[in-house]
Length: 64
Image 1 (cartoon, rainbow, N blue to C red):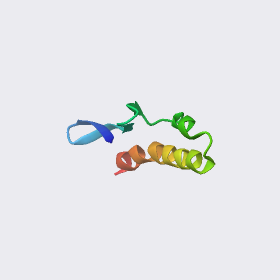
Image 2: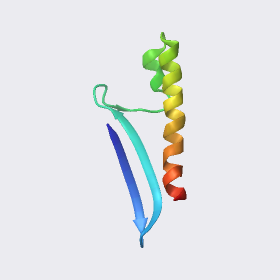
Image 3: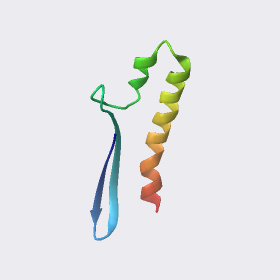
Image 4: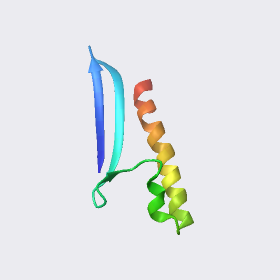
């Protein structure tokens, strides 16, 4: 599940917050989430790739 909070003022975007929430584990996906897959290197790498994307997405919207 994804959550997004957009703060605006006078039709301008001031801030964007973006979260992915694991509904089963009831926790927010973050840079520590890979701990759930410590015995599966390919999943650890996928978590790291996803986390890099999570850092990038809000900046895309702030640039437009």
